[in-house]
Length: 231
Image 1: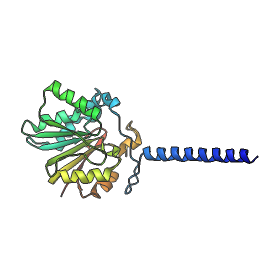
Image 2: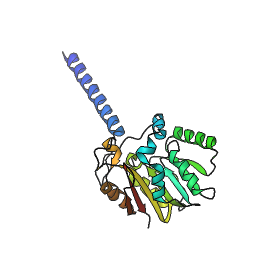
Image 3: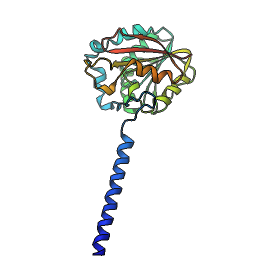
Image 4: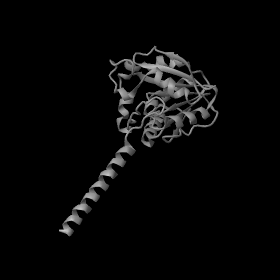
């Protein structure tokens, strides 16, 4: 009887240990929550979904060229595309800054950067430098950038405060940090809610890290253009 009781007790402890381990693993992989706004972080898109970045419908749904017109990239600027993916926006930015300008195309997935470099080789673009970042550091050069652009990327950061601080260090004084984010205020936009942001959420989170929201442009059909300035 004692042996049976001991065996049951041991099995109970083992089951509890497995349960605790599973719970810890789930907690480690579950999206976090921003400590200021309470916004739940979205899971980042895998490189396996890169085709979605180049879908034909993107022109109509996002109007990327109108977005870049609104941002007013200038010839000769040094800029970064953070979360560049396969390079859809990086290439457009490179053409606008011209041969005297430069684009740092950042991503945390090496596979995305491989796709991006294939695109650059095919299109013979030479003013883009790819940068492999981490979840808390984009690995961009210090005090160098006129502008950092993030297109439907910021909401996926699992370490947004650290990323914003590192990007602050990379911008020149007066440099701009630009977020394009699907409007959470509009439930009709067919994007998951954790992949949308309100203006209030973005302002609260980004200004807490030393930026100033200088302009909100609603020219796009589905996204906010949120322009922050580094003092």
